[in-house]
Image (cartoon, rainbow, N blue to C red; front, side):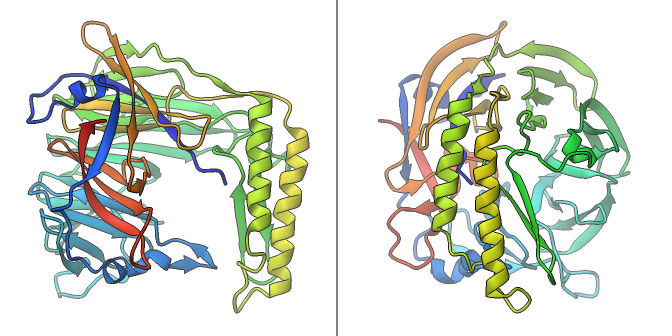
Length: 431
């Protein structure tokens, strides 16, 4: 699958003075990310991130890590499919691994990623398959469980002790996407925004010929699925709302129409703003180019990578060949442009600027437009991020702003150790 590389758009709902005015840096053009050499020194990365080479059914999972910044500047790193977290001091030094323990001191066997911090003293996790959100203190001691009866994409803490959640459910003929506010104390919830999308014929079970999505079922052990495009639906890109909290207001940003809805912390709608962004299309030729490159990449993959004690080498090769044939068939069926959302990802910087990332056409493209939404909105400049030392992964779980710095879980281009993943802190400078 082709990597999604992003361009960015910035919106500011209120500039807060800081030692480093980030907006001034954006205005200067290219912003260079410089690793802070004093941060996270002397860590044994092969040991700290030994889970980097984890796999499930021979599929890599070790880079499925994310970070959380604690109030004192410490960092906690999530490890997918593990029952512990890693904690680093404010200067980046590895401190310990810890899990969640009950009142008897027994550690939970299965834990989900830490999704955020509520009331500046309590972690809360993503949901398990039963809809449980586990809450525990900074030492790992269990406090309570909140229950939700739907799936979630994003959960952010609010200053009034509540949690804003992007949720979604699948109905027989359509999807329901919504934003709700959850009360930490009572578990009561209030839906403040919702949107319905009709399911495609393939998703309803009426057509098995959906572009770009493939499922292969092994004889004895489950199945495997994949897509060759940076989206999952041939009729368009699925875009759920993104959340931020600025100046004690909840921002709901809708990628489908480029609209910002501003709510108070209790969910009362205050105003709506149109970002005046442009949603482009992915042309037929662009889609075909993406598909051709995906096919070539897949052909170079190890055809035995699915093989294990349940799946024979012969069946692994069958799965590999199946995906290539499906991609080649899809290449011939690409006949229509695909609408893109107005933006893909939202990251909030430490000056409370909101960074809206678009889908880029070219790998390593990283240009962004800077907008300030004040007195109706104003275009400011174009800029881009560059980094000599790291291959940047730009998403809220891998890149977090704190006190004018960017803290990241990033891949070192020339790693002297077997594990290239690093916890790093970047200074932002003009190039």
